[in-house]
Image 1 (cartoon, rainbow, N blue to C red):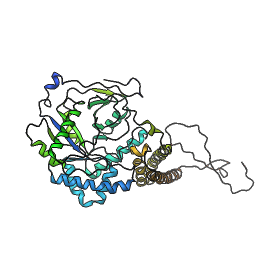
Image 2 (cartoon, rainbow, N blue to C red):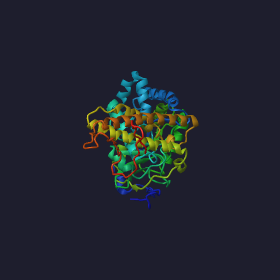
Image 3 (cartoon, rainbow, N blue to C red):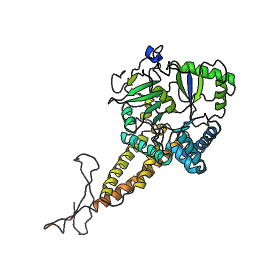
Length: 442
């Protein structure tokens, strides 16, 4: 294993072997035809240069294009990830939902990530990351009947060393990402080991996630481009199966790509084949490899200035994490005491917070109108959260016997103090009390 020397330092990674070992050359993959796996996708930006709704107006028709390509070309595949992108599509295009579900069930349209957005994983709390997984995986399980097991953080700005443990415990089998590797000749497929020893298959995209876009529409230029891509990927993998993502930020899937792939494969003497696939197709090949290096430590730092940029965004996030986790605890306690708890508003309050944890929003790299929209989302969540906390406190307090006994029973004023933390506290509690009698002073 290659381990970072200190917890906060970047991991030191090995150089790939110049050639496959003798053991590797005897594997089924080594004897298979060289293949470049093409994974079509589109990276929907939740909000950065445009607002959430503006990006939906641009991006939702891209899913329509993908469905048409899946319908037209049986060998075509496509990948979608964020609930904040897929959920509005299914709600606004209900007539497309049956075919959408059919492609998912066939494995031709693969759902990955299963968070509300492609979130930053360094700034939000661990509790927020868990809510992202619960919200996203829960939605896709209910609506599409799929258990999403592919972690997907293509554009995220760094990855902390506890991620392998969190991913595994949340039911993920892999993690695909672009940023955070600081040694350029690191193998593109390796086992990432977390601080507790948990390992998860990691798929680093050394050339980025925007490959094969835009694709040439004539065979000569297309062939030259994919041959050059194959050689470039060979710096990071000596195996005969390599992978490239075809897509970019908020772009329409390219209608000409299936035809160009078909033409390339039918040319004689091509040094490798092109094949459409989804992440789990490529993962099923990599898992059979006997040799996968183990890399431990942080895949950080990346863009460190984002940790302080628009600091009030981070303050709002932490405030809402505290309010909503408190509301969850009180809601559970209230439900235990039998009065009905408001779980619907709890979900409504969490969603804007989860959305605002998108990597570009957490980092504060948005334009001003998106910043204002982000603050409005936090204000809405805070309003709901405060209401739930007050309602749950009142409901719980009403079940507490605060009656006094003895000589002072008629004069006693009951005061209930709640501690939302899991340990004793010695803070000063302040309470405002009104008296009907005159002459009372503090």
